[in-house]
Length: 289
Image 1: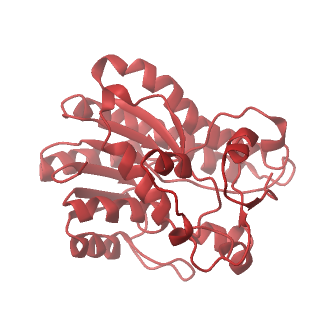
Image 2: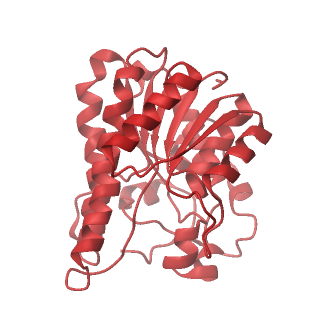
C-alpha cells in the first residue's frame, strides 16, 4: 500500500489536484516529475513547477520539474526521456493537465476550442502514448486520467459542448486504452470528484469564494488516487472512479475532514451520474449542468 520508490509522471501538477496527488505520493517516498508550463509565477494563480518540486522534496519525495507544453510532441518526448534518465523508469502516468472554458457554441471561439481539445484529449493521448513503452517495463503500471464518467446525457453538453467533448475525450482514452493494454498489465482508469474541489479553476471560473466554501479540498482526490495507484494493475482497469466511492471502499466513512469549513450542502460537480448521488449520503446542491 505504498508508492515508495515508484516514479510518477504528472502533466500539469504545479497546483491544485495534480500537486495534491504528487504530495501524497511524495509522503511515501515516490519520485515525481512535474511536467507543466508554469515556470514563472502567475499574477492570479499560485505555484510554479519549481515551488511544486520544493514541496515534493519537503514531503519526502524526489522531484523533477520540467517545463513542458503537452501540446508539443517533442517536448513531451523529451520530458519522458529525462524522467527515465533521472529515475530509471516510469511506473505511473497521471494525466492531470486540462483546459476549461464553459461557453456555449456561439460564444466559443475556435482558438479556445482548439486549446481544450489539444490539452485535454490530445494531451492525454500523447502523454499516455509516450509513457506506455516504459510502463510496460514497470512492476505495477498505472495510467490515471482525471476525467469524468462517460454519462452520455444532453444535459452535460447543452451549456458547453466544446468543453464536454474535450473532457469526454480524455475518458474515451480510458475506455479504449484499458482494453488495448490489458494484456500488458497496464491499468488505465479515470478519477473524478463527487463534489466541486477547491482549486484555482473553481475560484476563478466557477463562482469564486461562494462555490469554494461548498467544495472539498484537493486532498480527497489525492487520497482516492493513492488508493487506486496502489491496487494491482491487472485487477483494476477500465474504471471510471468517483473519489468518495473509492474511499468508502477503503473504509472511510467520515468525509468532514475534506471540507472542514462547509456550513451546508456541498456543490455537486459536473458529469456525475444521478445514480451516484442517490447512493451517497453526502448532501449536495446540483446546480452545475
